[in-house]
Length: 115
Length: 115
Image (tube, rainbow over all chains, first blue to last red; front, side, top):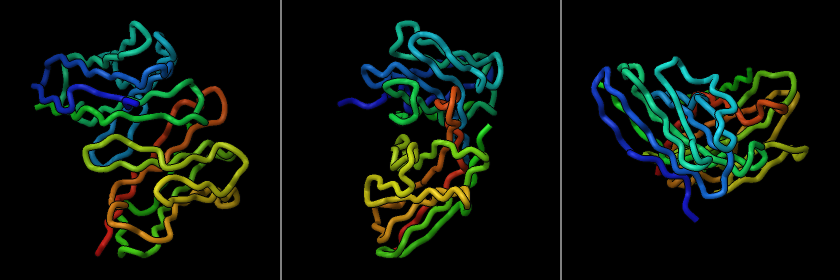
């Protein structure tokens, strides 16, 4: 079946602009996660959704970052007033429920470059 | 919070040789532990996971890992490297308990395979 998909695959923007990154999880997966991966580092947790609600947004770096999942499926990560330090790979993952035994399934990521 | 250390940012092996990638966790209570592989321009793929009592875990593509509580380790091995094993490998951990969804990743180990 189809895996996690993310669009766009690449996004180049200018400092100060607003961007939206989309994640389409595996059908039926209730849990959805966003991670950020800077060059040469492992992914870092940003936010976790269980259904429509953000169960844990403690990883969002500041209030310029926001994520939604209005219908419990597709999620959008929104970044306002982008800064050069926001440049990274943004990864989305989903799982059947909020249990690690089942594993998290990752999408290919969106590479964001802020000029 | 959980933390994980991957010793060696780069490993180079000959085709057919043993692959050994090291992962150590920091907590006194053994966490859930995962190994992921990331090929260029692709998302993370789960290789194997330690979530139960079985200390020797077999994964996909001929990889396996052994949990050693006394060494707080979960090193990844493959007896005979193949050219297709060239990729970046990440070890990740999560707490057992209410935060079990939050993966903390190591910095990763890049594997190159020499013909």
